[in-house]
Image (cartoon, rainbow, N blue to C red; front, side, top):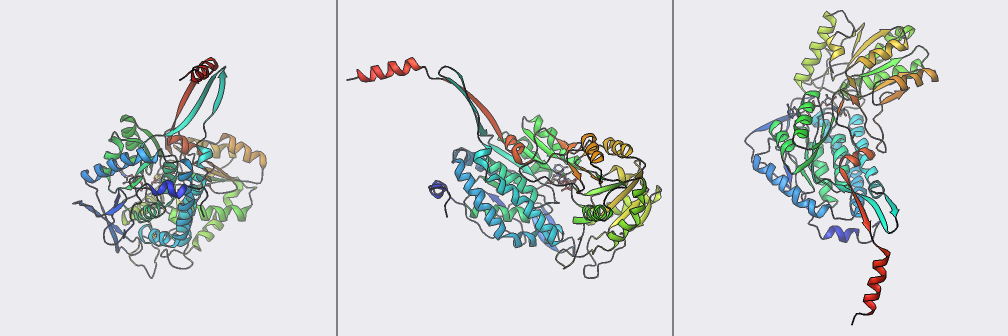
Length: 518
Ligand code: NAD
């Protein structure tokens, strides 16, 4: 059923792209509404992290294909920006339904390319879907303001899209992160050049197909693949007005600097080292369950993973119980029933995590649970690391200083809440921090004094729902306007302020002259 009369009609005059077969041996490009095979000479293999079997190959998009995509996005902008806001709202309503209808396809792609277990893959999609749903409220989010400033004079603001914008995504949330970008950029009237992670582009390709199916016109969303050269194009081409990036520190700092040097807006979400502080008055059962899930879920490959547990005073006695819980988690292929965590993304990532665990042991940490030799019978070639718990970790150790991005939990023991806060606040990252306590005053002190942008109180770091925004800070974020929610709308739009004078006397003169016109 149509929500607004004419919505379909207003889309109908725009050319609807065709959707076609998009996966298989090679991942296609999505340019100007068509899924096309790249003419690239260089391709990158995507292997199933549980088996090492080739899933697909991803092209390093050629310079002329990038040019085509940018040209298409630029041309589509002239029409898309003028579509009514209700039309863009309708697209979001239809897109959320299409994503719901295709959840199983998305899950299958995520598990095959990224390795996460089905429940984590579903979460990846659902949290992104919520952003699409929130963008169905775009008419209200785009509202400007108006004031009668003097007799016959009004000042009002209108919120306008920027133009062509670009999105560069990491591997760990193949659906969620593209969905931080696609709905907000498109609902605000921009056209988007999206670069999924070259390690798992499948979910983004399905999302492109769904966009086409619900009537997103040609050129409004383009998907290009690649690595360094594609990123260099997106961060320097003069048609691109803003760049959204989510990923590692190294790539993010480069992309932020390059984008801003070329006069673009940039928002860059970077790495993390999230601390959970456990006070001895906490609900033990609840805290340990929550920390186990947040440390090892998605094989620790979440920017919201709790990778450091700070036990205050007598709470340190609970560590053996935490180890028991972690030991019971089932490591298996993502599609296997009952699997709690799947493989890591690549053999290199696995090897790096193992090296960090070894270095921790050699620097004096106790390896209370060692996942390095985990065996998964059905998947002998998978990149599996079992849950690993390190105790007596100190701040000088590599396992504390670096983001491991694997199922490795570092336990630190301190005497007081003040000491715990000092530790968290000295860390370079500020993505999130949690506290577990039954004391309101302690929780309030933690929330007020902690130097992290997302705070959990008796919950692990929550990814904020889309009516809020994702607000990591310190070393976890570059830029000043966050992803999704009102901040996301602000990022992808600029204000125009109009002051108008319609003099009352002129109206009278006009009417008189109109009366005397022959
Ligand atoms: P990554 O930085 O390796 O890749 C992200 C994107 O940057 C990819 O599209 C990749 O092609 C590109 N890229 C990588 N190296 C590049 C280079 N040298 N030059 C130009 N482009 C480059 O990140 P990843 O390993 O895919 O993702 C994991 C990281 O992302 C972790 O650090 C994690 O904390 C972070 N992350 C952060 C958030 C957040 O919201 N803060 C969310 C998810 C992931």
